[in-house]
Length: 97
Image (tube, rainbow, N blue to C red):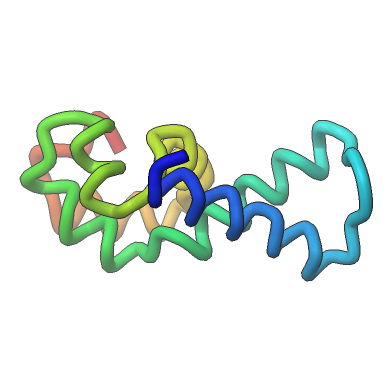
């Protein structure tokens, strides 16, 4: 595993431990854990700083030191307020955020 992969996997498992999970979890729980791990790993500030100049999802994930899957989870879980913040900060990305 790469350093970013290890960082993401460890955070994912720590979220499980924080919630008292043991063993395999149903898909809904895994989805919630993935979303929480992504929020822990990528702040809105970090995302808004790197998004304007990144040219691809892979480049953005690399800059944020996460996997593309974790970045995708973070983007999918943006709140309306977070989307508005990013759109205001990065007008050219209004359609993609």
